[in-house]
Length: 231
Image (cartoon, rainbow, N blue to C red; front, side, top):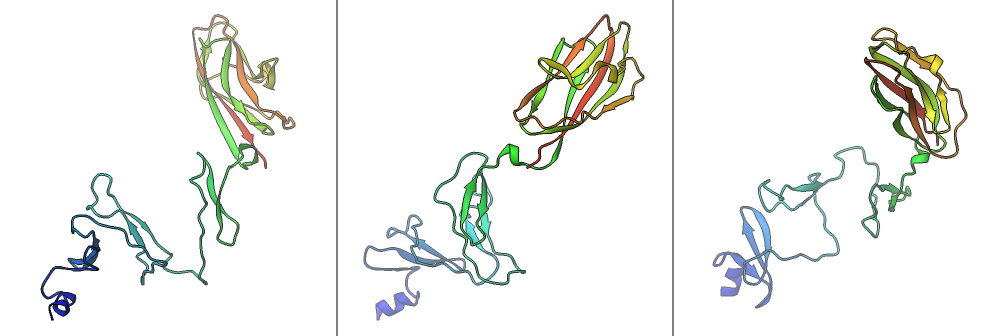
């Protein structure tokens, strides 16, 4: 009779499976699985786990949103699904900067995104000052990229001297912008734009500003390079 009372939870606070087995107990309406000593949680092993609502699976919520115990919830969409599906995760943790992709049948894998295969238009900005060095490093233009526009915006007009600038690469310093395309002695707010209209280069290029300071005592500008990186 005592065994039946214990099973119904009328005489002890937990149900123990086997003499030295795990314990099942109630904690404010939640089912807990504890070790035989009732001192720590223990794992539950099953071939399938199913929730009956859209709340999802909650991970690491043993503490109330403190420290490292903020919870993670994995949930299904509340609407919009038209069929069941299985998502199979990769066999490893992947490598840095890889992204998770699918084959369309639910098999996920880690994929390395190639910089050379990324579509988009980008802009890089470099500051030029009246006292800059003769060669100002800009950025590395990716292989197969196309420079569509180079813009120089005067923030502070140059004072005295006859300073000049070009944009290009080592050995071809005016490749993307020649010295006759910009007047550093114009007014603040002036913008000088050129469209190089050059074919894509098969390898990466380190762009530089080649600057002749002359006797300048003031001046500041921004050099913007717009480029596309077609797939």
